[in-house]
Image (cartoon, rainbow, N blue to C red):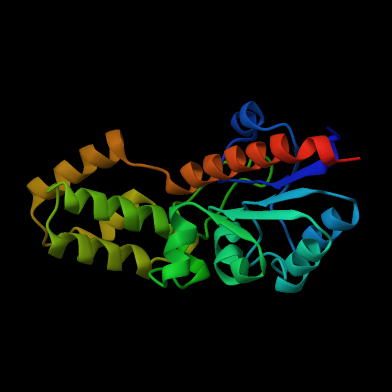
Length: 223
């Protein structure tokens, strides 16, 4: 199978080394405007959009996703920009994967800001925490009885008020834990340190496994 037959746009959602253990593909940096169009023009048969730029440059256009679909490519979206675009374009055939995609599709997530974060431009290691991860981890902590609903709401609002490059669990607790029960906050700190989940990473892994499944199904028919 030609390496360029499967193109994955990946950045901070998942380390590339781990991605390569799952799927052999042409891994490219977070997608900007025109990158999906170019991948389709180059003959990609499966395009997996995970990460994309939001503020640094123009983001992936809806028209180029539709162009790729009309060119016969399977286009998958998950985790970050991919989840957002899939929630908007699944009616045209883009396949959305994961909990973040489903949250956008249902309307429980609306803003691009939910998945935005900052990262090292060379290693792609995240330097802030996406709001969606904070949201879902607070929901889990509340569901497990670690914090109250009141504490969950106050902490989430504190995180949402922070400019996205400054969002971390530490900054959330610093800004939002005033006047909240300290025993709860200590339980939450322990929970976040030991058990917090990275939902963007989990969805990226699901998308790569789905791309691998499609590649195995479709490769006999490729030129």
